[in-house]
Amino acid sequence: MSKSSSQNVLVSGVGTSGPVLKDPRSIPEIVLEAVEVALAEASLTYNDIDAVVTASVDLLDGLTASNIAVTEVVGAVMKPETRIAADGLCAAIHGYAQILAGAYQTVLVVAHSKPSLSNYDDITLWAMEPVYMQSLGLDFKSCAGLQASLIAANDTMAEVTWANKAAIRRSFAETG
Image (tube, rainbow, N blue to C red; front, side):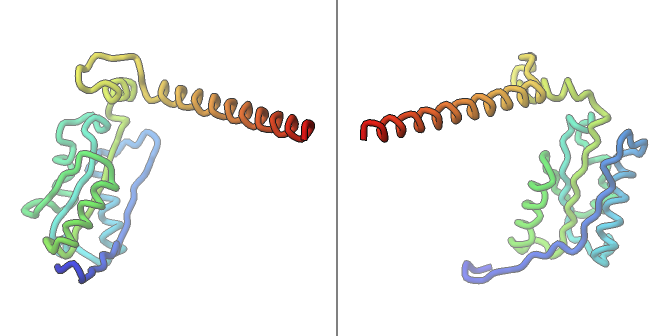
């Protein structure tokens, strides 16, 4: 594709299957439901798909190579599949790039997660210190609290700043 040409990329179907609190279904069952909805909405079949991009985070699924669990239900058997170890937006961008590059015409992008299969507290501790795996005691909840404290402190500082500016203005007005 030359630099002066442009190519439109169309999202022709979207499917979801959750979230469902305490979902008893397996990851492949959950993903299959979403894929079937997306394909039906796009009026496509598995045969129409040139390549597949899947996105998942092993830690959240409590699995190793969690994309392997969905290879069949996303139609990636004997087709090019790219696994993105991140969120669905990264997978969508990757699929978009594959189409723009001219590698494929139709790409199925699927993102999944079932964090109830793993221990949330262990995951957040690991995410805060993945290199040495030595828990610092900092998790997502602690970070949210620190951010809230910072926001509150900034709001207080802003109030003090505005009060000082008002006092300075009054002082100038009085001495005029």
